[in-house]
Image (cartoon, helix red, strand yellow):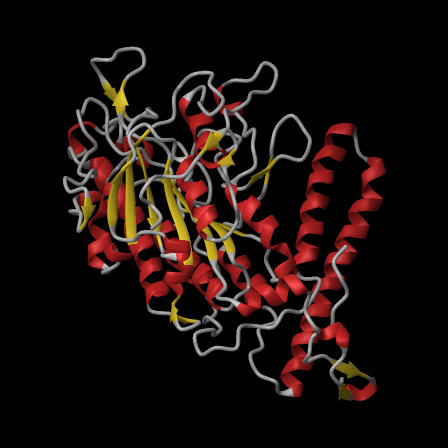
Length: 477
């Protein structure tokens, strides 16, 4: 049970708008664990993702991705060039040469799109429901962001974990794991997938609905009223849904039960009216207005990516969360490559599905689109003061890709983008001694080992993630 606590800025509200400030009370003092976290520099943990492999079919090496230089000052080819454009390469290390075996091993995967995603972020082999097919592949472990969020939950932030997603929906395909990076094992046979927010408007309103930086009593009263109205609506929705439950069939009860669980999680996020970080860097973003229209294949993810990066940046800056996931595109990404000027989807970039209209470095161009927005996000972090440093210095951010590039399992003479070979992960930030600006070759290591390194970097001791043990040698100084 969450301990009862009163904000130091709380007021006694009476009739006719009367408000009386409270004196200091012992109950206003944060818990010991929260004091300990506040005494030091707060760290942030973030996992980002692109539904793209690193090379295309038939090519012997990843298309314009893999640097030639190992160590510091690695070269930036087409795929990673935006990191140089935004001047953030010195904040980003690149770990290459990793692999996820396509077999029945504890940290391997079965079926590429349906399985490799969960293996990357949980370090466990994927599972299948009875009679399932590739699209039914399911995660079998808890993702690293949830482990970190659980370790830090006593800090008492607004969001224990902030999950955002840029790509709105798939034009085709329906993989059960594809629209989230957050999974939790809760005693069942398979992990529970946590919902992600793909609406910038909803994310904005959730973050800023009670924004108040000052101590002006009128502003505090207005903020408190907004919080109480929001909470009462949630209570009403929950009560109405619970009354409906007995009238439904078993399948609908199960679906509605999950919906109720999500409502309860939302209630916990708004169960207290939080204060915002009292620093010049914390400020309310301008209202985004309505979301871009949702269309099959492309819903202006170009603009959505920028908005979600702005939201995540300010959530970290204002200390509304210290753990987040940012899913730019889903596994087997069928988002149209409109912003690249190509008449195909991002998944088909790796298969050259558009024939002669797709250039040889098509995969690299797709990755570069992701890196453009990632570079924009990192640049904002690098320019944000935070406890005597810059925000990016207090972060551990991992950027994962769906697949790597290697020989086709059915024909070793051919190369395919549907491969767990030669995978790579980007790591940004310097939390816990992370080494920034280096290219590290970790031949044969599992990508989940990068997440183990990042978890340890933010002070969450981890010997393993799922079935993957150990850190990446040389990633932390």
